[in-house]
Image (tube, rainbow, N blue to C red; front, side, top):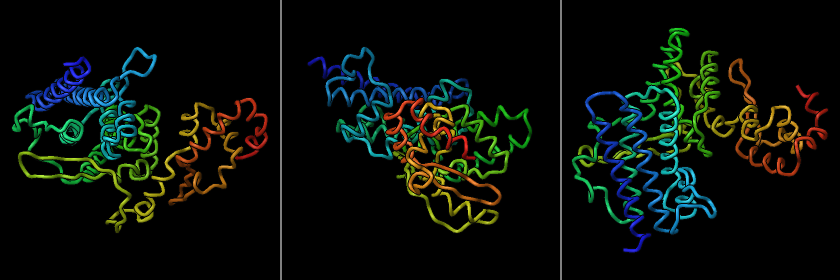
Length: 354
């Protein structure tokens, strides 16, 4: 067998072995390291599977002149954009797994049983989908069907699950600062769903985590803080064995406001999904200070472009937000002008504008 074919076979086997270990770990009888270990092994399973696909189709998993193989995000980009073997929903689901794994490795997080199940079962389903689409084989060809399901009580509505999570976080925040660490740890896993389902698939940052808690304590609705979560849906098939579960991303639903809901907030969730960046978010993405960022904004007169900037008032609060198109336009200007040049050109306008 040629070496390249052996490498593909080995990567595929390692992917399946990691997935089986993740299933075993999910079903272990005690909790020590169980959530973190499950997420790490699931992530490793997909990284090996994606690299097997890339190796099979392109012959290498290394960029020219680089000694290290592709990272997870680069693998996602190649398999989706170049090889067209991942749908947008599938890439979004893997970005969510990547965000969960990132917090599991680098932070203290509290993953509820329902969220861990959701991530694990959807990962098993997606692994089987990608394996079948890329290599023409099923996961059941390698391991018994009896080990495929990781639970017998699948959730039917991801929104009810998330609402339950956020209600428990509210209870912890309401208990004062002494429960704040627990609330933060619990919120990390929910935030991973929100940040990773964005079009630019971000990971959870400490600054955004703290900002979300401050906004909630100031009285903002969770659906305004995390509008992306409202787009997630579950697609289930089967009722026993085999069972499949997929996370989908849809457009914002339109519905009647329920008892106790603010109709304005429900109606405007799509606005916050489009205008999902603050000035601070923009500055961090450009790696600039806020004043220098505003100088670049003056160059393209961003506040007069409704596709890049919007303002909205809900109750007593006014929101000034930017879109992904704003980031793209600003990056073009950043390439054209140095900080010194743009500041000299627009500093008077920046300092005058309140």
